[in-house]
Image 1 (cartoon, rainbow, N blue to C red):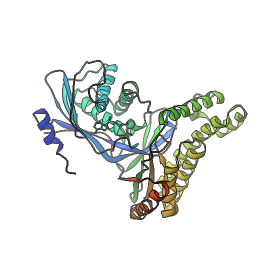
Image 2: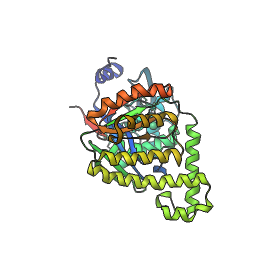
Image 3: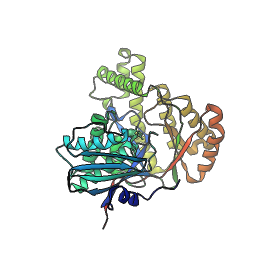
Image 4: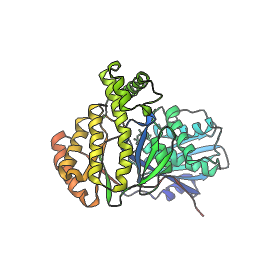
Length: 383
Ligand code: ADP
Ligand code: MG
């Protein structure tokens, strides 16, 4: 499908050319699943698929926003309006960011905005964080707010938690804001310290969307959070981040089997994140494969968030490439996507195996999203 040039579209919609563009990527999490809200470690990668927001400041207090992904829909509101949903579901994210900034005593001047994103929506690649972070990059630059990248991530999360109404952790916004190209990002979710970790250049990242309909996601996700809180309280630690296998065994008799296994997942998963950081330095695919396989098994048996479709994708990947592909379900669980790491030269073998086996085993078709590790927020003013 031929796409309209976004700068030409901006001029068509708003009557003058944009003054600049802010760009922020989507992400995929390599390992560290359900650890963020336990103040643990995560290791996501920013993608080379980005959201771009073109802007032009206005003389008045009006904010107008359009998206090339939602043609013929414009939202228009004043900069100090109370948060309300507006005419389009997607523009909640824009109104939410403007409202969140006001919580931090920052009211933007009037501005025209055009969104153009390559991050597929609702596939677990965090198109929402890419949108929030690029928008905050644009508002921070035009209003000279002086926000740090961490501030931008925290404000994006605030917008999503308190205005859009999704209780996400801070991983997505932080990696979208601060990622370094060619690197994964180790995030300590307690201190928010971020450490870029180089990824071997010969490795490809392939995301396989299972297209399994995600059901009960919200209630089950929340139940897992409650299980983790129960474990934390029973173990007498301030967060599961501080739990160890020794503490867990000492309290085993007091915990229900479910709660025990949830805590076991979080403890093991934090270990796996830190081990993978070392393994990436060695560039070993077989060791990476072993870690992601352990993670997948723990997601299945301890955290109980996998489904037959994502399990089939992982099995098919291993059948195709053995220990030369690391694969596991990524994201909030109960379906969604599988992340695979393999050598660039092996991508076709992998994809042929998925094509041949997945529909037959599940009745579903997998969408393939090939990604390179991209950079975080960038803001450019046009001359
Ligand atoms: P994801 O896993 O992709 O972040 P979410 O449900 O959290 O899924 O966020 C997707 C929502 O973000 C979309 O439904 C839409 O409201 C908004 N969004 C993402 N990209 C765009 C875009 N290019 N234009 C307008 N809205 C977008
Ligand atoms: Mg999202």
